[in-house]
Length: 339
Image (tube, rainbow, N blue to C red):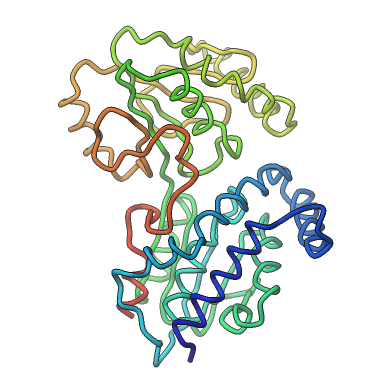
């Protein structure tokens, strides 16, 4: 049993750890060693990508934000803590951390199965705090002895999760992507922010923008202009290999597409797009577009726009969700509190 004050303090300490990370401070040497090992384990987890995630979490876990997050839930000491099984994705660094801190702050205990290609960073962070360690168990084997489940994976994995965990209270997440809606009034700064939303973490996150909705006659060169500051992604071998492969597929399939040497734009209705590619679609009428987006809601993780769309976020902020910005719009903390 843990007091709410202890749990808040533990999250605050974790946020402090993130905000003060520095290669000049010997205290952080073990963490930088783990980052190095994570990069060897998963070629997408470059040091700059890991530090980007750490910086975002340092901001999210500031004391005022923690208080704002938990304020509406009237959390108390959890008299009968449950064990929550967590199956984490491994597409971008620390992607499963929000589920974990939600379990901690709610007073439950976590039984965690990390992704095979991401089983170093989060276990290390937990090991730095005896209190967090006491509330967390990591396993590589079969999940057993749990009361509820939070699982994130591909659409195929989600079908398996739905079947296997159907008798337990659960949150099952599938593939979703970020989209952007432009209306032609965007500034150069907005478009550069959009470029960041498309290419941060090499476009691998569920909040990365993979589909653009553009007004008729929109100049696509403006999109490439916003992407230009991120041209260095092509220097990363795994990204470059994906770019070359997908470009070859488009050429052999005789698809129409535009490219700038490190990114491709293809007119296509599908929301999900391959690495190094964004799909785009023109629209005539904002009202019709709004209806279309409602119909596509199950495929959309977030919307980036200045066009007055309810719930839309600012350009450049897709990968900086607040603690209360829940994946798939499912309130994880309310789910945990109800158990």
